[in-house]
Amino acid sequence: MDKKESYRHNLPHFQQPGQAYFVTWTLKDAIPPRALLFYTQELDILKSRIDFHREQKHEKQIVDELTLQYNLTRRKYMKAYDQLLVSAGNSPVDLLTPGNLEIMMEALLFWEGKKLVNFAYSVMPNHVHWVFKLQEKDKWEKPVYLQDILQSVKRQTASRINKREGRTGALWQKESFDTTIRDEKHLYYAVEYTLNNPVNAGLVLNRDDWPGNCFFNW
Image (cartoon, rainbow, N blue to C red; front, top):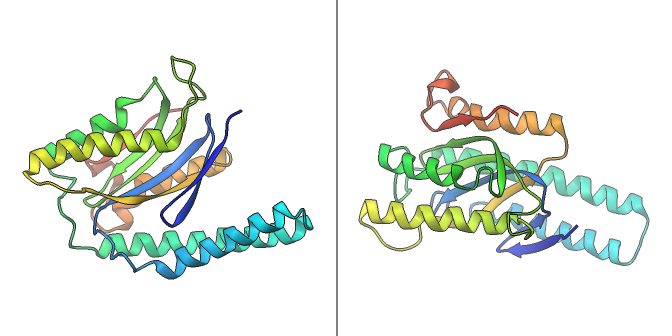
């Protein structure tokens, strides 16, 4: 099976067709550029050390310990990331205005059944959480990669929302935060986290009342 790994900006992104993902991305300037620099630098260092020990075929225990450190740092990053998003107040647009929300929902559903299967999403005022599984191949028998899906969704929504808002320039932060779903339990927690995001942010008491939430049975 084809695999692809890339470094887009600060975070590593491992990509495999057929993989399920939990993805978060934000509006440009929703988070101050250097606010999470410590975590991104730490993740970069740990990733480099893991790659070095793997290439040198050192003891598996060393790689496992470094991987554990990496995952712990990644979780701390995500927690800090979410806290900053809730408190942010300088985003260029509000994704929850009716016209913008419609654009977002159409884009998140666009590849359903063609290149992916949706599990859940939550459109927040300044960011998006999305849980889905890629198909291994599209109808043209080409592998389906995460970065291609995200580029498509970001490009489409940026163009339409900018036009609607009468603005130009970048709409989305270039970086996205993606996590591969390991198993059914991990999928369950990713979906629950996504749908409960507006509740945890103090925006609604019941997640079913949030207009940007959507859940798909699987």
